Length: 471
Image (cartoon, rainbow, N blue to C red; front, side, top):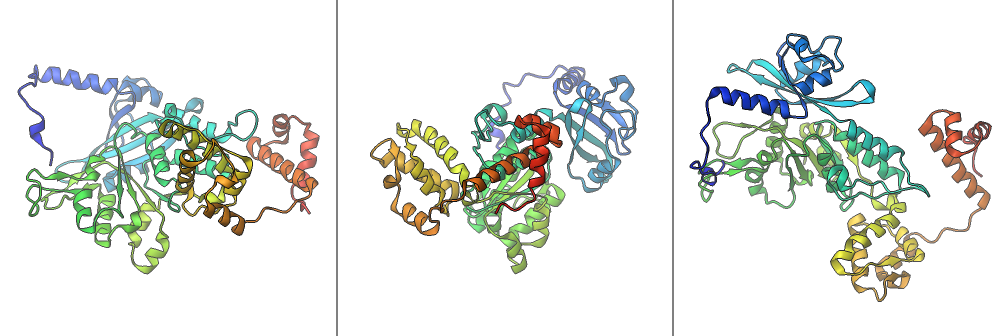
């Protein structure tokens, strides 16, 4: 329950009447950059703002009374979407194509009468072309001079950058941006220290919910007895020692935004039931409350546990798992993309310079040793190593001798230096990879040849050799 004493009423300017209120509401609706439409339960348009009319591609005066699922619109809604939101009373989000290569995200929300029957549907239409262009830039842009960093900067989605030279992590980043375009639950899985929380923040900041809060809950850090009241809050006088004014839970505080449930595998079974009810009905029951509260929250869960095995063992509810397991983002451990170690070390060294007043550089030999270390703590462990070197290394150039003994011993034991290989085989492997990637990206031999700066006949010849063994 909110603390009304924080909001004094003696300074509130009285309203000037119902007509002025209607005008103010109209001004608010028209100033919103997103398209807003009010539909009947049957899908007929009752009201639209100018932004919606522009996105629907029909003058505003011709939209009222027209079916939103009929032909002749740049955006034609699917009747199944309206039926789904009306029957489930949940938010339904979909992405659609617009003329000119643009894309839009459509969010539908039903409203019911006092008998629980759907009486109308609210539609929000947002042009997400810019986010789609960001995905394409991630997929296709490589700075001159070689493989580049995958980079989300503050000017893009309000976050520090994610740096990678590897195809596997670039794919993870692309999927995160695609997942941001819809409201479906996301399950992020990966070992500890791989950056699951960072990708959750990417999904939130690149989504239509970026203007609202992202609330993070570590399910393993809150005692089981307190977790229910932390998540769902409690009513006034719900239990002995409770705040007399009640307390708003983190789920409700995330209204219109995103709720990150970190280490979801540590959530007690009894609380899993309540979380499932919230996901199914969109309502929260504060402890001691006599009625629920409807909340609009997008849920992202993260875990380093094998949830599938937990379901089989009975320690995690199967129905909750399938409710969360809609969009899955698998973040690989650092040992599976060691090519990212060098750019990560560079980024970390720059970031740490402001804190420790010193920027270190790692020699090629030191980077080679780090590349052969298994990093059980993943990127978080790499960060700790770089920070330790920035503070304790004798010089600003870190060589193998400066690295922690456990790193050098483990790296040399687990992964000895590779034996010399045949230069011809190496060149052929690199060439095959470039040809294959160009063909996958551009689709035709002519375009791939132009991209690589060779003749089409050369590409045709090389393409025939792709299926042949390298030895």
